[in-house]
Image (cartoon, rainbow, N blue to C red; front, side):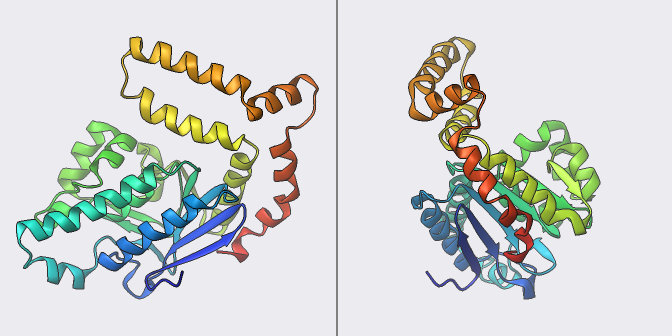
Length: 276
């Protein structure tokens, strides 16, 4: 598909999804929300894609909501605002629930709602020049739709601090509080992303999908519920084709099939910046 506000490059086994409005620091509007949802569905349907990298074109990752869009919604009724908010909430949930692993390549400023996109990804790797802010309170709003994902990352104590103050967060501090997983020099960003991709590709693809599902479900279960559920999961995976291949490879002291495939594309991963 041809998109207006995003760019989707598919180079199996990797999909590169860019917020592509650099002239406004990749601020999102209704069009971008719709297009991102369409792109995620396209990626989900492509079985040859093993990893999704989400990033921004230009100097920023995402500056939050677009100002021109905000000029429109300031005159919306409650029902119209609710409809727009639900669309954003559904998009971030869609990203969070992707069965394949997702990496946020944070190349610059990430403000307000932009943190919802990166917090819904499995891994977040930021350059050391990136700045973060949950600044909604400064304009009389709150980071409502993104709050489940951000609070999950930084915890209630830090959420109290940053949701209420709206203060800026430098990249090293973002790593310290758990808002991102890794902070690296800007010149090393693509190398760090490439290394993360390689780690993911050397893991069983079905196992990764089941691990993500495990995290989502077990975190909401009681110990009693989790006991039977987790026993069934491991029993199922042990007799699955992937589980059989992985255990056989381990016992036979060889590399499983997916590791062999990952090694074949490692040279391409080393040059990941050419796609970015």
